[in-house]
Length: 191
Image (cartoon, rainbow, N blue to C red):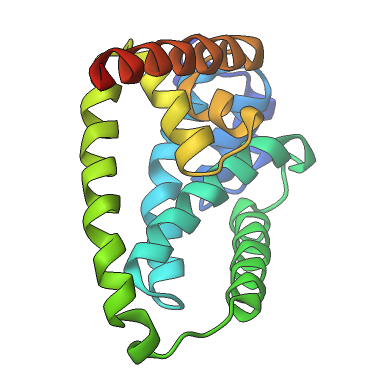
């Protein structure tokens, strides 16, 4: 069903100025195209929101985290109510959570960070990362994607499923099979 042919009650549910609210209402009614459009439109807004408050690298990651939160909390949106305050509330909570997490990290002086023993271990880390990247290219793309998300970047199975479009059980299977193949490839290259 096209967005323009939505029932009148959906288009009247949000004010004419609240296009995002109209898109969310349509998405909640099962219009996948409206949902995809909404996520595409709110992502730049989220990035700007976080870039005003955090370094760019953190802002981009946090915008992605917030998109996942919007997806997980979409059932709490009430059609007819303004969408932007609902979105801003989610973004604000994500921002506060990140600030709290950053505050719990211990600080390290620059001397400690670049001390000689640390530099010696750096070569091994770089080599391991290069080897891992080369091994990951030998897996199926679906396996590589979920291994990167869950095992390397720390996302949950649920988050990886939402980000890749795979079911949670398929994410688990792809991780298991991918890691088994990586293990075999690593063992073969060590011989």
